[in-house]
Length: 355
Ligand code: ASP
Image 1 (cartoon, rainbow, N blue to C red):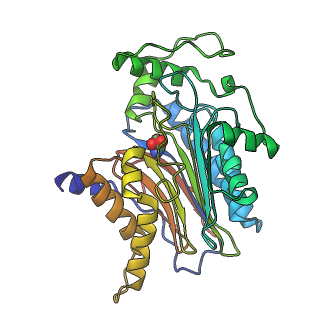
Image 2: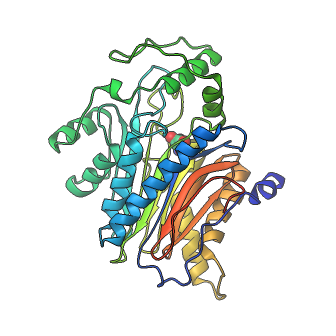
Image 3: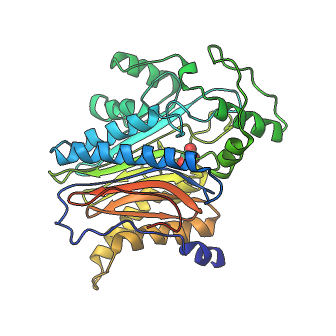
């Protein structure tokens, strides 16, 4: 519990909405959590992350402000981040110990609890779009591996050569990790560009980020629909077909009519705690309580992240919309994050001491 108390100070809530009905739309996103501290990043890198987060949250906000649907906002923002090599999703995803990019994604709609998810895909440019197709155009909730790729082709989704996802810094980070584990370094993937030198600082930052960089978005549209989605390459040097929490409905992503959550962190802990669904359940319990709670969304998120997750030894965080109000909670020193509420300005933050 001492650890929980120490990290509790790092919990920061996003700007409040005056009341539940004041915001006609809202959106919140994360780009991964980890040991991201001031001084770890040079000014240029920090500016590049802030710019990417700002562009992504504005893109989502614009869709919602124009009366667009939450599902389109979530998909569009995640597609942007999947194409951005800074984040561990789509292009720029981490490598498995066998030298592959195996991508996971999920999406869930609050009003009817419809959901779609994919795990271990290697040729689909936008795994979030495939997750959406699973939800809307298949009788299933989760597809994995080869079958998911076949379904993607049937759906006419863009497929790319696996080398499309390659980035030198993720490759170097995996190489370092497999050497540390005493495993053989896999051959460089066919079609990967010629090796280039990597700055030691960039590698160190990635390790401190725990190679996180998963992306997630929760959006509420003007019609009151709430959608949450998450996309990731998983964890560096993962083995044996490992699947994390991101494509697991309830663990990495969850949505109800009043609560949407996307998580990032060490998936093994998030799965066991069923983090995202648990936070929404906590919120429901608080809403049903006799006394009015001042900030039930923050309380619900903190009780799972600062208490349950921390007590279990897991690290990471979540972004959430609770009755339309953006919330974030993380027990790591930093989390790439942003929020935007109708009538307000976008908020972008990285370090734990920002609000
Ligand atoms: N949660 C992801 C996983 O375990 C990783 C992350 O969020 O960084 O696959």
